[in-house]
Length: 112
Image (cartoon, rainbow, N blue to C red; front, side, top):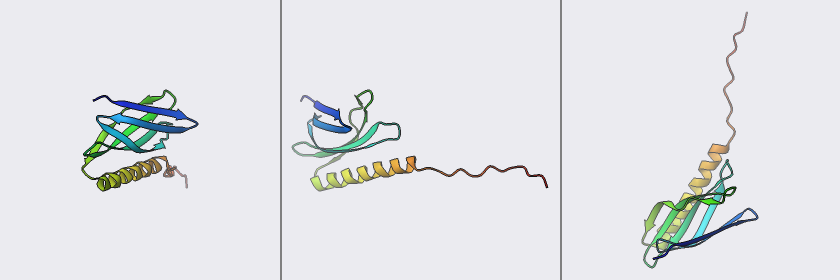
């Protein structure tokens, strides 16, 4: 079985299609990380199973990491729930990392 993944990055839009390990990409979602890379989740299906995969794409070098951290399912509803849960988690992690944090004030030696 031949893998054929195609991606395009035009006008700040990432398009991902094709087949990987017998699974056809159905949907994908990605967010831009603080360093400019894109972290994403893909939903794919074979004739009998579904999978969600994590991936990373680096627009400056057009490097695609491939798929990893697969979660496999026998029904579409469970796979879509996982897809949305993972997408939400990915966004929440990014928000948490990019939020400004207040620094504690430095203690000063004061003369009285």
